[in-house]
Amino acid sequence: MRIYAAPIPYDPLGENLNTGNEIGVLVIELSTRRRMKVKGKLGWQHGGGFLVHAERVYALCPKYIQAREEIGRVDRSDKRHDKYLTTELSVNQQDWVGRADTFFIASFHPETGADASHRGRHPGFVRIVNARKIVFPDYSGNNMFNTLGNITANPNAGLLFIDFENGSTLQVTGRASVIWDQDRIEEFAGAERLVEFEIEQVIKIANAVPLRWEFLGYSPFNPGKRKD
Image 1 (cartoon, rainbow, N blue to C red):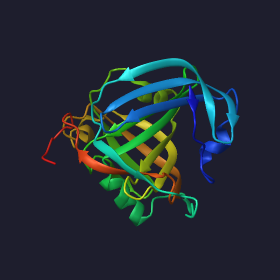
Image 2 (image 1 turned 135 degrees about the vertical axis):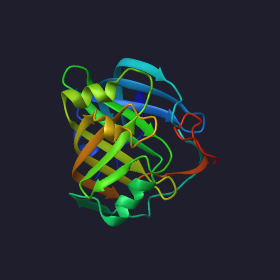
Image 3 (image 1 turned 90 degrees about the vertical axis):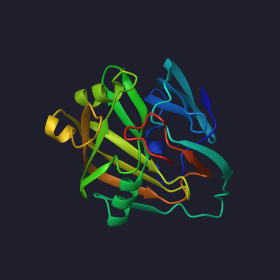
Image 4 (image 1 turned 45 degrees about the vertical axis):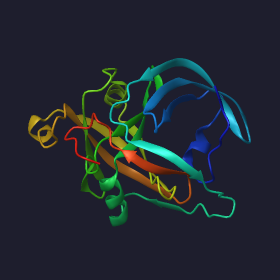
């Protein structure tokens, strides 16, 4: 698979795109709620992108994907990619995370390699415990348990939050763990387990994504479904 895109300056991904490295890619079309995973190894690279040698490819269900339609692309040549690096979420970043209806999670297993997955529900499904800890529910999905299995074997993980209106991104890295405490799980309607995430580093990059999206509607599979 050839990817004709490259990381912007300051994106940690660029430091890890080395030939032969494991990589997990999530291909997602928000407007149709279609998604596909590709897992494999990095091949050649050039200034405009890179090659992925696919080892495992599989389609996933449309559950919990909020529909958005691409409405335009911004010329970033004259925009600054300001980077802000901290070890905890600021008040504004906590608000951003608390309002999110979508984020992406990266994990790694020593035997099966890297994985990228989607998580989505109504705003508020990611809860702020404090500036260095968040928790989010895990619901019935495709029953492959890639992410949960990975963080059980290796707790190091990363989260990506995208501001779909202005193109900024929030990359949060740290250690994840699966919570089975029934009393805590019952605080999230319909959840089967929880994931607790202890934050080690936060990177905010302005104007990271050139695309802009219009919100179309929440997934009909979201627990506690409400009118859009």
